[in-house]
Length: 304
Image (tube, rainbow, N blue to C red; front, side, top):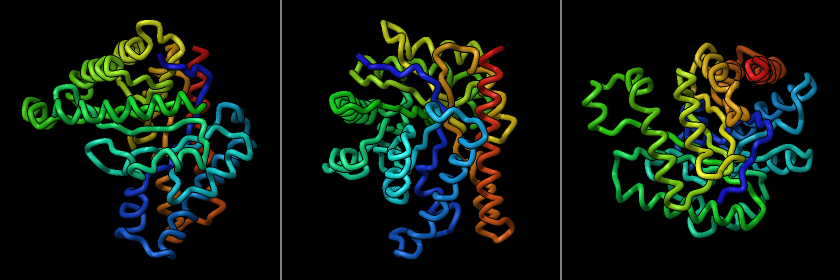
């Protein structure tokens, strides 16, 4: 059974790898040492934004970072030394099927950084490829058991992308899918994974437009004695209005303990910095203000 984690958790995630390499800088792998340093420096800007937000009233015990080892090793070490919540991704970036970033050596990499959370991003549609879902579930069970045996929490980022058949059925309408089909698929996915022995402490949940749907998904994560399991809302690269709406719908529900909003927090400031349209200091301040906005929105909606 999952250990669970039900304290407030306000994560600034910047473990994106392909999005930084290709999307932000137009680099193609393998990166040169100079390109790697450029990406790492941009991630330091995001981290400095979080640290600035801490001086503006974000509770330190709730603040956390999610960053990858490849570009953020120094950040992970520093954050751990500062007593911040840290989370590390275990998955290979940008793959349809979950697999370990460092192959058979994945345990060694986790042991080196000792993160608070080990995080897995997983694309899992219960109406999708059954054999692939079974393979993913077996790896994820192994990851979760390792986490709990070694003093880490397990964070599970569940994405439920449309299958080809669902896309045909809805004529590719993402909004219809998000509103009418995705909530029930998320619940089915959560229950299937739990039945396969996958026991996250925290579920990272894609935003849901209706509070009833958010409540039903939260109930699935906590059913059958899992009453300490937490849910956090992920941003999915949405605009500010979308994030604020999802936070307001989720925050009043006890299972929702916070959020992990990445690209909407940092993408525009980093792009402006890259294009020399903004100073580093201004980019750091903008990221801090965006992160603060999510904290304040969540906390206000929590109070009701």
